[in-house]
Image 1: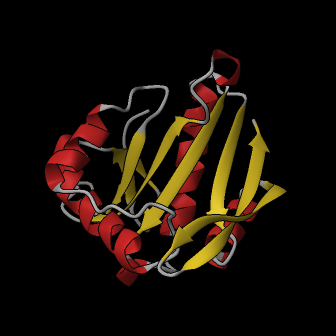
Image 2 (image 1 turned 90 degrees about the horizontal axis):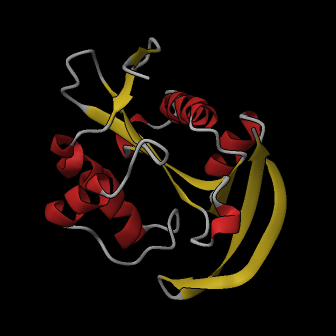
Length: 172
C-alpha cells in the first residue's frame, strides 16, 4: 500500500530519512511521560536501525503534513507480539503523535492505515499494551474496534512509580 491522503494528513511508509523526526516524537515520551514503558531514548542512528529492522509484515508508517512529506506528524508500527512460532499471527501496534498536533485525528488516521496493513499481511490479531493512565490511547484503540482483554497490575516501573498496563485486542 502506498501513500494514502486522508485530508488531515498523508499516511505513507516510513523512510530511513524519517528517523530523526520519529526520534523527536518518541524520545520525549520515553523521558517525560508514561505513554510508553520504554526508558531509553534513541539516538538517530538507533532509530534508523529500528526502522531498518521492520519488514513488510511489520511495517512502520508516518503521517505527514502533505504529499511532499516534509513534516512528520506521527508514526505507527507493527511488531511481532512474541518471538515463538505459535504467535506468528499476532502483532502488537504502537501509535505516537507529535504533542503539538494531538486532537486532530492523526492517531485515528495512522491506526486505521496500520490495521489495513495488518490485514493485508495476513495477521490474525493485533494487540495493544497501553499504560492504563493513557486514556486517549485506550479510547483511540476502542474507537477502532479493540476490546480490553486484560490488565497487568504494576508491571512497569517508570518515573518513580509502578504502572498498570492495559491489554487491548482486535481480531482481524
